[in-house]
Length: 206
Image 1 (cartoon, rainbow, N blue to C red):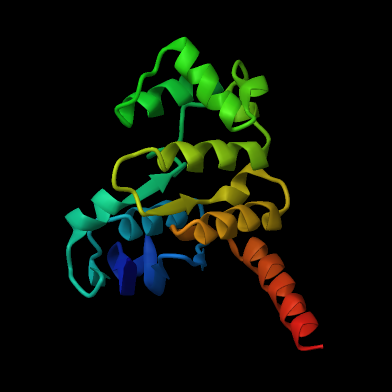
Image 2 (image 1 turned 60 degrees about the vertical axis):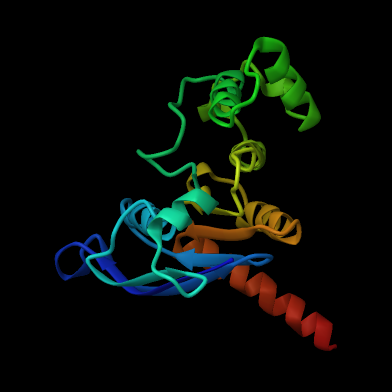
């Protein structure tokens, strides 16, 4: 699966999102920069087929098919759109996602699933208090339970704090499992990740 956004924008004169071009595809983790409070979510909605651009084009495998994108791409933890309410517990978030995925969502099923992800100790914790690494792990693995999902668009993981390389390495691990990963974050996180990648490239050449 390959999704291409070409010069997409939203809002008058691109105020909500200036012209943006990016590609994300199966087996790769892609980082997209988006600053301000609103733009990461707008870009996420566009990339996941949930919003039409005011200009530009979006294609999946060479076709303009937003419905197909929606079927195959999950929008994860987007502020004001798909993020859980802050006071809902990890168990509550898990139960809702299990139900959405068509699975048994009772107390025992929730505990069993969390145990399998090594997250059972967080079951009673409000999602707003979950550490960044565990939150991204929880939200992405739950999204992957949905039938037909081949890619994830994770919005503003940097807003939860922690080191950017933590969630970037998580994205790379999911890409290695065969998923298309798009991580949308701010310039500061992108700079840290870019510097780490440059260092790795230099080490490989040495």
